[in-house]
Image (spheres, rainbow, N blue to C red):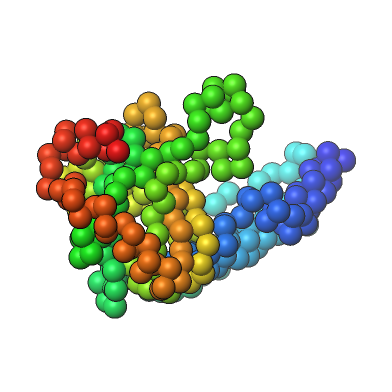
Length: 286
Ligand SMILES: [Cu+2]
């Protein structure tokens, strides 16, 4: 009994420290897009449903263990299945409760969230094509004629423990993607070689980049700042070394950045027009 109380106490302590979780980054990163916010809401809702069920089921169990406990040698009642009304009630009520929670309490908001996630086209103001490549990202603004590659800048000796690790170890790149704040951006993603996955946790988006396919997602970033993510589909030996960095800036800054990218890029053939091998060669040369 003693150990049971001890276990109960440690569970309570663990739950009591929920407030401390955020500090240790166990929680979601602060959501900065509608999708990320919706995902966090869904997560919290499901968490509440699960906790209510948890306490209900375990409360009943522990109550029954204590109140209906009989001493050793007691002859157990024999049941042959739900034959009377009361037994049917015990069979059907958990089913009804779970069906209600699943299909109504969780199902309806989840349906709306998924429809919203998939709506990449309504009011999209900008299109960015993201191409995964072993082991870098290529970004292209097709309408603006801007394209560039983005590769990790963390020095090799930091990776090999020859130097102290920097603040943004493995999450820093030479050419970050720049996006305007508050604009709906439609992303189209694909790959040159194997499957990669473009992921920025604060945006709440993660989409596989599949060779031969164009896949879509969207993001309206509501807060300026620098956001970091990683390739999240195992794609070869340097899978861990192809981070995503996105600078979200004001409209004016974005226009300025776009103009600065346009000038040198104008002389180069758009990477999409090249064969994958040539694209790689170009990427290596840059
Ligand atoms: Cu990758």
